[in-house]
Length: 82
Image (cartoon, rainbow, N blue to C red; front, side, top):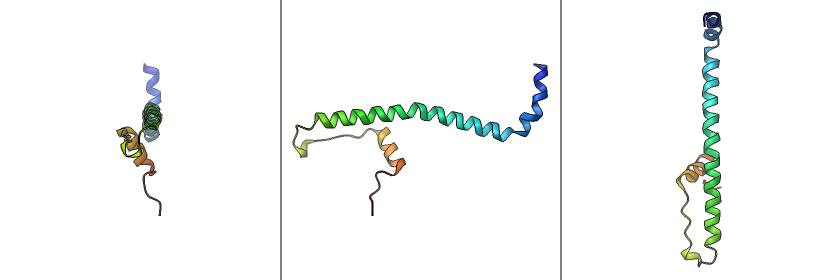
């Protein structure tokens, strides 16, 4: 481990770059886990809608999952156009 001590000046010099890189790696991993969950919930919602096609319009209810509501709210899709 002693030869690695020579790297300390370089690590200190680029400390912020290393921290920023670590943050981006963590965010990338979080989105890699989060995106498939959103797709699963969207597909389940479509399947529920197809299953309710035979019902009268006033009896159709599609509860949007919380994760999907967060995604739609974050993207701004739910905002009315003017």
